[in-house]
Length: 256
Length: 274
Image (cartoon, rainbow over all chains, first blue to last red; front, side, top):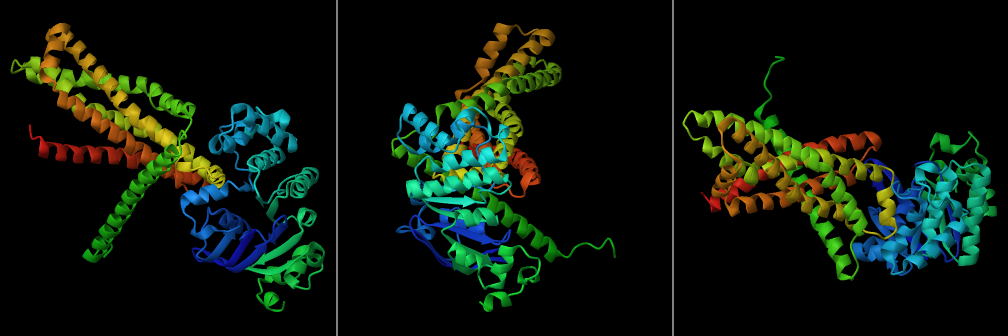
């Protein structure tokens, strides 16, 4: 479904991705873990094509995202849903209009069909009673749910989630996680989640990858990932202050 | 030694860097306009409306209808002052009947579009930049792009079209307000009755003057909208970045309007010297 091949990316002096290669199979729920600023969101943006890598290739199905023209890229993006860390709802539109936007702009559906789909998606995320509210009137969790409804409204094949449970209380975080799982199981949606919330990651993932110093240093199923021998992964999972992460040591990677 | 002048190489280097920056910015705004047109026409080619009429009318109301009091009032006062000051000078030579023509020509051809351009750059240009800049820093623009919606045709095109179409209308408001103000001065101070005033305006004003003013207005509208939207969509650095870009947008748009006006006049007088 998605493949990254030897992707390199640098922001000015800082090397963010240093030869990242990753493969995501259909209906998989991949969770990319890593410290803040490690490049997790960068990977999601590259898959969407809003950011171009310095070198390497990114594939979504048969399309090479890095080589697509603007017009084709826009068409491909209609098959991908993205939930941003801070939701990125359009502040001047109410909940209903935010969710309806992709349908109004990209489909030929009639107003009644649009209303029906919007109601369905809002019901799915439990936000059907907040249709007329503006984003500023919503809590963080509610915004995330609306963002999820908007990402799902075009029935995407791939769902990208950037820190879906960051800043949410544990109950709402679990609701979001359950939603992601049920979408993948019922609607066969493939998802890639970038997070450093341990609980959420282990709940969602069918496979996990650890990004550290621009490289994928571990890729495994959750249970294997939890008991990884890699000192960086082990420290990250345990949340310990002792270990190579704070030292910024590269040895940890080479010892793998 | 503290007052030592910088060596010529440093000055030349500075001029070179400024020129490079200027040309890069001009190129960026030019391609921004081209890409907006391209995205909009692509959509039309697919048989779909490029943006919703409601969104276009919202901007025409903000940029146009809401600007009428400001443009009208400022032009009224300027027309008043212009008629008064030139009238006293012309009166010394007994040629005060030239006032109507002078104000009418000056405003329709030059001051109307220029003043309106400057006022709109400050009022609407700043608003467009701040609005789009805020959307940019809160990832709203990226979210629109991520959905597969072209942000240029969705966000920029309705604003651009509104300003392009509204500028000539507002210039006309400015012209009428200034001419009306000068007619009041002519009546009160120089005993030129209103019907005679109108005859004098009609005698001196050429269709060419009106067309020149309208053409200029269209182009000023395009320029202001393009600069304001470009600055908004290239904001970096959070809230402070929005502030910086808004200031920069107003300064750039006003300078561009005045610079473009000069260029237009040079080209125009080369082909039509009278």
